[in-house]
Length: 189
Image 1 (cartoon, rainbow, N blue to C red):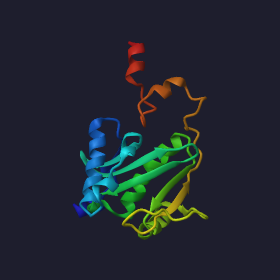
Image 2: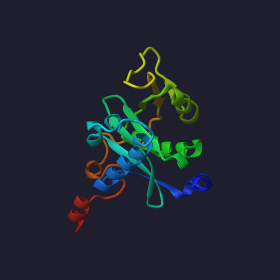
Image 3: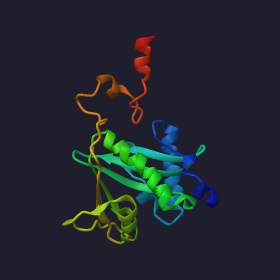
Image 4: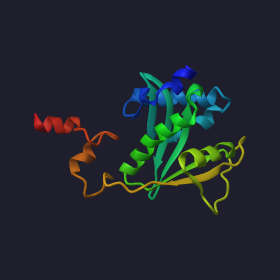
């Protein structure tokens, strides 16, 4: 499987979880990556899973990665990012992050926050272009090193969804804003 992970990024596709099955895939990836590697279940999963957007990475039909995005007034927060061991490399991470950053920007956000273990903060900075948030205290969580807060500034996009966007776009499924939704199809029929 490791050779497959390095072979081609074209085989990796990403999507927003919009079904119960997609949410189950996100939870399965996190269980594999977090719980099996020693993180207590109660820390790997919380009530925020049902108010967040989940992004999934697949090779063919097999889920290989997941991340959760929560939305706040002036920023989005990326959290619970997990990739199966054989897909943990900078190329895969950059490829998947491009999709995530595009999704966040399309929703009109220009700031993306994350909190990272100090051992991983360097990767967030070097590979993905995040910066340490100055003047903030480390985030303390039981059983972990203090987490570092990092922020990424996203470029403004002309495709951002705003109050001036065609109102039918606001009816469409999360992440599928360029595709008519069932309600629109019913109107046309």
